[in-house]
Length: 254
Ligand code: BJW
Ligand code: ZN
Image 1 (cartoon, rainbow, N blue to C red):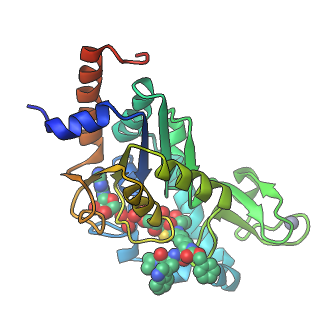
Image 2: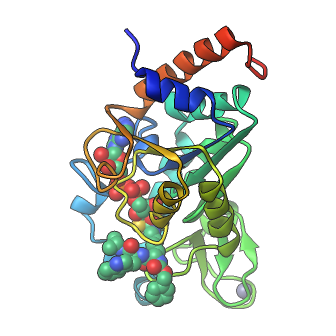
């Protein structure tokens, strides 16, 4: 049985530019825990003690212990069928953009080529004093690694109260403003300014499709909500659009 109704099928099929805005839920099926919700890590740990700069300065060892643990999880994980389906959409549409709040690099690993990372990337690190980049080899040797200049090295992720990387934010916002269909996948949609890009897409006339295990802050503005696992729903949507495009002879390559 088809998942997509006629209106949604048409909206996606005739789109020229599509965007996937993703959150922790898209990586949940890769074994990377989400932040909020039933199995979210912030049910057990307090974000204000770990995900902000003051906490890092106060206790870099503790914050690093947490990030080293998460680096290991990310390093050992693999992209799942949701990341793969998102990447596969590149064979059907000439403009496919991923805007992700995730720091796990799994969209790129799955083959997505245009990815804006709003909250950084856990595979990178830098010195807080001179901004020199560091790879994980150096990091894993010390409990609170330091740069040659003496500055503390930190993971290249965005903590609460910090500005988002402007090039990534602006790139994402432009894609949101100019797309026809905007998928919102596996995010609670409560963290700003990232979530504002969903509203930019909505206000610019995009058709908003949400995919989430449960209703979220975004459900009320979504044109269509699919409740379920991203790793099951996205491959199904991809297959239905591929069939529709084949019928009309407009597949790019496959
Ligand atoms: C599935 C699924 C499956 C599960 N399939 N679905 C009021 C008070 C205090 C602060 C603020 C405030 N209002 C606004 C703020 C600012 C603050 C903010 O937004 N806070 C809110 C929480 C209230 N924002 C900031 O501080 C930002 N910076 C900023 O505003 O700068 C301006 C400024 C500068 C200087 C001074 C003052 C202001 C920065 C935000 C940085 C967020 N960083 C984190 C951590 C990154 C590093 C790390 O990972 O350690 O980013 S927080 C965390 O939340 C992470 C995520 O990217 C982000 C979003 O979470 P996400 O992805 O939505 O995950 P979840 O867990 O919330 O949701 C998962 C969803 O998936 C659920 O809905 C599930 O149902 C679903 N799901 N499995 C489909 N298989
Ligand atoms: Zn330095």
